[in-house]
Length: 420
Image (cartoon, rainbow, N blue to C red):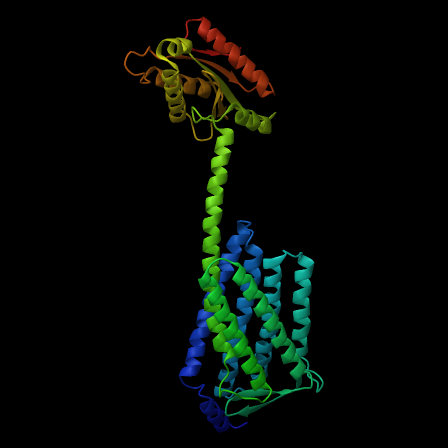
């Protein structure tokens, strides 16, 4: 085909001016969006997010749309550069991208619905791949009859076979069914903006698909193809809709996590002191047994009953809170402190030997002596029993720490004692 005829045909179609450059810029935008979606999907899978599967099929659909737009441009560039023998390769690739895009949209709808297994999703893509294979075969009874093509004033058209009409009809029917199903699902979701964007995107995509399908079969409504431009607009709209939907989901998930964390705190925290409760410490030590290493501190306040009897339970509660604050300020982040009951506290020092445990106990005793008890309050002091986890059973170690605490109180209080 002479180069002058090719250029004349392209000039008639208007693709050698602003339209071609618009498609090239659109292709660049779709490549950028596809790259962002790929990174986004990878991050979701890395964090094992429940939306990862939907994001995967959405990304595949966008990659197919990007392939279609790039292939459509490649056909025009092959003609402009007089590389006529390579025209049908991107032409077939563009048709293949359409089929695989439909398969990925079907898979996306399935994932958004009943969460199907991998076999059903794999079957969807296998059927799409099988239909794609028909495009690369040449026979008068298949989609493409030969490697020939014709060039008119409105573009390039393949030498279609008998299966071309039913092939395009099936693609349009599948697109219509998927579009309606997606619209119903979007209508069920909250937010008018998301619904309107979905209606506009699928309506535009479907109208462009109908136009170009009939155009390929010889019925020309407009003197240019519209599906590539519709793909670009659809990708932008779909990306915006996905961003809005995931932002809302993220806000809801964050709120849910905060609620669950508050409930967990209520279940594991002592309401008065704010430290962990006895059940939580027992659970943590049971999970680490019998390989837990470190030390246990058993802390008992001195003359706490005198505070309650002479100054009231409100003063006693404030004293418990002050002691808890002193413990939090002294311990490391990976240590666990709990209110064992009444005026007794137990501290688990993770991976601490006896020397380190004694140093922490000394700091706690100094911190307790400087607690503000208010006007008229008695001097504050505490006794501490220290035991290293060497028994293979933390309960035995705690018993030794309790015995050391009793010995410290018997020896005059306001001191620490090491378990034998």
